Image 1: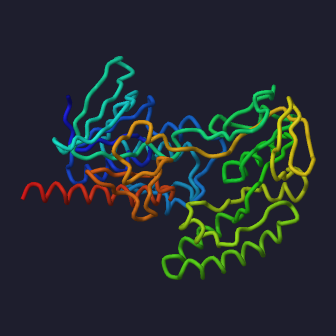
Image 2 (image 1 turned 60 degrees about the vertical axis):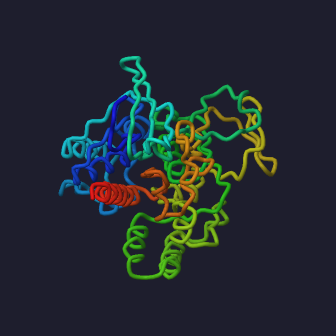
Image 3 (image 1 turned 45 degrees about the vertical axis):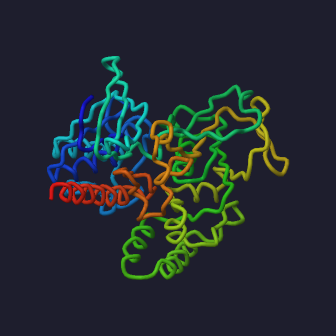
Length: 382
């Protein structure tokens, strides 16, 4: 049994930020990560052309800024280098290839008992921790919806986490399912590389430019969300026009109200809307059935496709290993309480990065968690 003051599960940005904040208070911790590297989603499961969708001002982790020469919208590889520098700066030493199998709260000992599998040594490790931080991420398990006949599809069918570039799909008929930021950008990437591209857009979405989002994020510090939404939507309509005839409808609630209430982010256009208007990307409402290479859609349309990319999001896997966390997480492994009151549960349990508020939300979580743990440790020593 190894004792730890704080146990952090997950070495993505949330786990790293929490570790850095704890180190500022000289609070010892153990950080475990199931993969063989930090931030595995960013390193291994993102497409090549990805940049941070928000300006770097809103994407810093606690206590360390980006290099002065970093571009306003940081490319994926530069962000990974930033994380590597962050690890070095705060001397963070994750224990890689360590898979947490279970964690239960011992009411008698008033601590968390964590059982983990050290994959490198093929051994089981037991930890006893006073505090437990769930930082395994809301993007820890791929979500692919049930589609009738999908098993009959002979072409390539992948989750967006496996997509890298459209260069290998030139001339092929490709379908993207999902119209969030990843789905819209992947559709653009495919079409730009010469693929015959279609995208399924089921739900209303807010399409914005990155400049509008940056402006809105500055204004929300000074004006009510609804007032900011009115201005931002008016400007977006001026830029893009009415997109309903192209199959893109706006939600009734504004982008910043919607984000605060549901965690749904607006789509930041990288050129996809222009290609939709030109007819280079076809918008489809809903898949009804797949019959081999033929995919049928709502309304009777059908087409032959060589590949499908499911940009349909992720699920949290926290509930597969966390026991006694029902007061903090729901059945989907996400916080029960709304942001910004989601990060703390009972029995010295915390979560970082599960509020789906991006890197800015992660930074807030990490600072709050470290401060709360410090206050509890200080009160214990009195």
